[in-house]
Length: 286
Image (tube, rainbow, N blue to C red; front, side, top):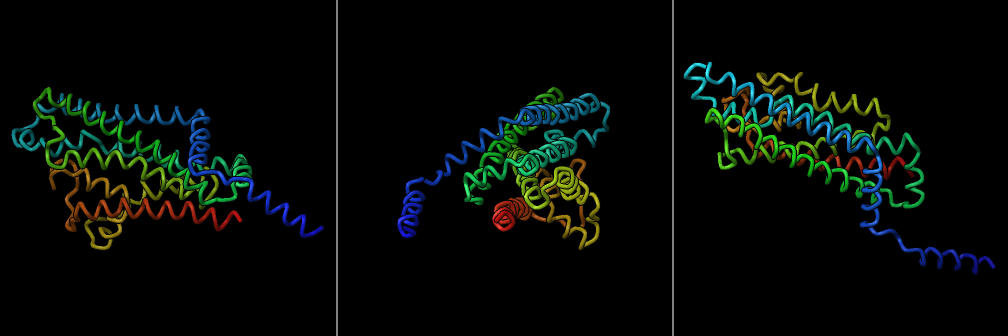
């Protein structure tokens, strides 16, 4: 009798197909867009970022005739590039996208939905991988749209003073791509912190400290301060959006670093965050 029962359970497990990864992706897509806050956060933050860049460009459009000859000559490309995606816009994007990533993970734990999900799909790593694909995919599209529109609008405003940039300008396309990828990068960092901390307030505060506060605390005029600063995503974004070294509002550091190093920081944080998100769930939710 026991052998028959065991055989029946094995046959049942064999007969029940495991959910395909595409099914998990569809489920995560449905969960993401079922949250009303998703549309509001993406649309609101997108408009805020574009508005911040447009406002910076318009301010320089009005003030450019009053600059001295040297400042006017140096305006393009350094300052024009700064108006394409300002520090304020980057701060807004970092804040919004890290919150999106954090809430996408922490929200399921706080509501208890994660238990239902893992009961239906015991493969926890696959569930989190599907969530990463969906959430970062959406924020990648978001980042591309916001960065592209910001560049077009800001440079269209500045072209009224013959000071706008085109994407053919050396470094201009890199600026747009780096600004676009800042969104999914901060999203996956927020997800990793959410998977580790699992409370909304603490996760968001930690994300703000790591992504926004810590870079301002680093003194790049000192060697070790520069070394540590150059490992942070916010500082890496600043290097990647620097079209002409020493031009614009960027601070010239006595310890410069390469564009390749900044891209490496992007990649390292993304890979580490993906691994942390998946492994922490596999280890802690047994």
